[in-house]
Length: 255
Ligand SMILES: [Zn+2]
Figure 1: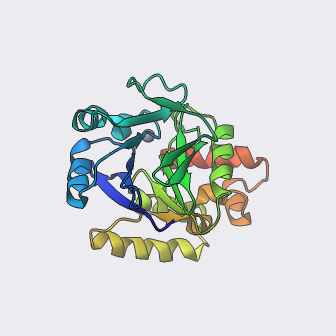
Figure 2: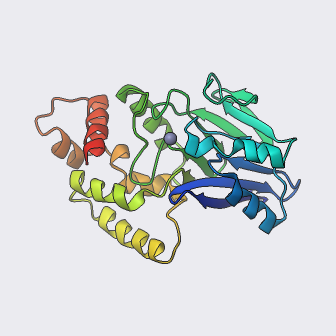
């Protein structure tokens, strides 16, 4: 898959969108767009033209740049989660399991609802784009979904191969790690990762992409069945897996 190049485009202080360029066909695709200007600048720097735009979910910090991109690229192919009427542009609606050609490779669609009612992740081998469904050391708030949906989505995401790079929608990692330390205090991997991420941030770099293997070590939302997490969240053992996911999410909301 070396012919697909991923370029991270930061915007709005802590948001990310991602350009995927196929250097065999020249096809360029974009995952999310809250703001067009940084994308246009990145395309200009690389000498790329934009062909496809995939939106993970309707929140404006992931979609507000669409009109400006369409103005710049009138032939742009637009894709959105099936059923999401709050994304008012006309584009192809994608459902779980569908595949879309992005040059010589195919991008596969995964439904990952919980953060909002319609959320999609996009995957090509080795690379997973999750929007706000998952963050490094955390996950998106439950704006519209229930704990059962979050548990289902987390299980689905954790099922990707360990080496998969995970491209998240926000740079929330250090704040998430602070919370992770409170619910998983014996986990040395959290403090060591926090030091690594702080070095990156001090250098003006980002902690995206993370990986499935890394998240299994430090993300409490991937670790709710670990004895240490059970001990912190539910010392009397009254909750099941979904109950612990819901409680963990509520604790994070209040942190
Ligand atoms: Zn969001």
